Image (tube, rainbow, N blue to C red):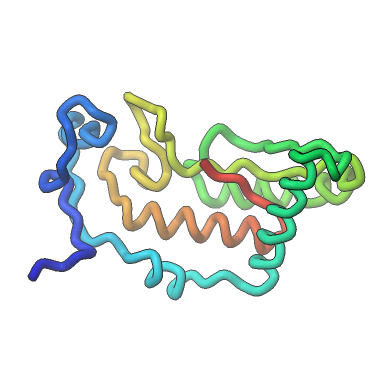
Amino acid sequence: MSDPTAFTHAASPAVAGSDTDLPRAAGASVAGRLTPPAELRTELPITAAVADLVARTRTDVMRIVFGSDPRLLVVMGPCSIHDAESAVAYARWLRPLQEHVADALLLVMRVYVEKPRTRTGWKGLVNDPRLDGSFRIDEGLRIARQVLLEVNELGVPAATE
């Protein structure tokens, strides 16, 4: 029996011309082992403080959306993350601002690590973490999870796609 975590793009049932066919159409070879989500969560675990931040932020967002919290929700940050160090530096900059405006605004950092609507060009950190068309998705998943953990560990909520 084959390894269920092994992934070879050429073996995928992609339809020619679809978004899932872009790496192959661009001449990229996407092959290798994708780490199962449970293994990635074990390798890069969430802390109790981060879990609490995520739960509180989700509740706050729902309250704002449904009108029981008068603050405005502001999702802010770069178009997409391509450099982990710069993303964490932005979160460090955002943290004091977040505290300063907390009574009026809920600031959530935009941490987009995929570009699902991009039909040509760079497909995002998860799909191409080295920005070279190598499609090292397993590496991209690790980097993305690490960035999200670091941002949250700073006390900054994050929004993804």
